[in-house]
Image 1 (spheres, rainbow, N blue to C red):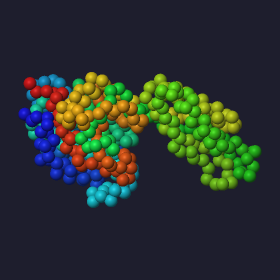
Image 2: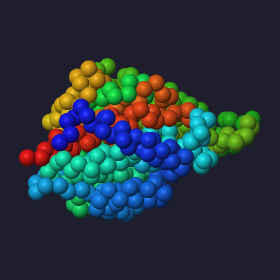
Image 3: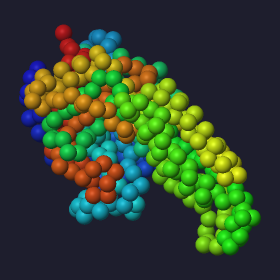
Image 4: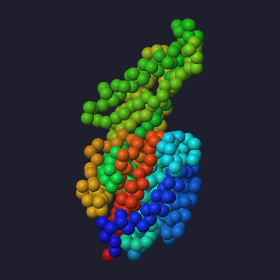
Length: 390
């Protein structure tokens, strides 16, 4: 039986090939629901290790299943596999060869860490039960977790609990972070269309200017959080786009605002929606225009179950030492579709240090290869502790 403290060293025998695998995935990134090559590689790796491989959930998703012993207990581990529509500027020898697409969020690393754990689990089978390794598409855009669930993920592959992780730039490699309860925010995209009456820019009195109404609404929206939520609450309303017109001497008929809205409390999100709709209608009407609000719900709040999070934290302490494990004090206002899985099953989402790298979704970002071994060791240790052999 491997002792936990030897896991990282044991994974060292695979490290060279795992790094090469990660570099290959980085060189050939694929956007959500188009991860055909990536899925082929994952499926091939898992099959060679003796996993039962199921393809097609969420279109390009993969589930690898491995059983050992006689226990009926089950555990799911998830890694995301998609890239982003960003043009890479790292200058790396293994930089993306696909213009305008790169692994700017480290999903190539997440995939590699879980495949590294797959090798360990298949090699030693030091657990009693069933582990499902979930390689999920489209985290960045189409909610691949929700798509896999709707395709029967947890009916076909029951999981007593499910865990996921993300790399975190600025935190030392080998340092892991945990938080009970809300970890990442819910998000909504809001499109507000203001309809006025267009005309000649030299005769504004004959028009209803949607640009002026839109500009006024941008300012009014700043009060949704600052003057409607408690200072102890957390919310974000950001106007990311205001588009209208084409020429300097033409007042257009329409102006369109696109917002991102983020929150942790569903009741708070409902209230923010009511205030945004009221402000849009009121501001537009004050200029003689009308407003239509299209509220598009995105990912829900990522909420870590307390017992699962404590278990996951204890596993990290046992593997890495208490000095390399920290509690995340404040939740992140970014969003994560692993939230859909945590709505269906107990579990937890944790953060793994990526060292001094550029920030996520940055054209200069790169996953830190030094994080592969501790990440793979952690997943292996978590399975062995959760599905503890007799």
